[in-house]
Image (cartoon, rainbow, N blue to C red; front, side):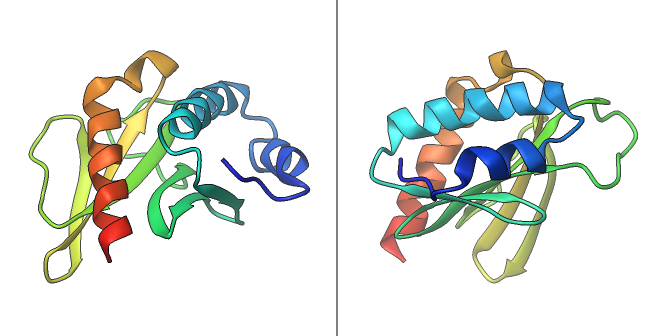
Length: 130
């Protein structure tokens, strides 16, 4: 996956004081890099965005924690043409017709499993076709 010149410095600044979240992010990056090596990543102020032609996923820190959410976790966001019904989906919204944004809390690298990677692959394919 293509990364900008100051990627590592930017990632460390993004996760400053959040070592558990950084570890989860590193696992997510490794898996997305393996699945979509032609894509690229961009570290922004509030999220780290993953692209391959278009944005297909993002990772962010929780600004507000909802009841029942883990204390230390990464929020993984992806968009699909339909709503995914799963207890793992922490929140979902339809900001545009047939464009569903899903958020999943990920507290450990082991939670980046086949189900989540399947959703991210579907989101990648959906974004690539746009």
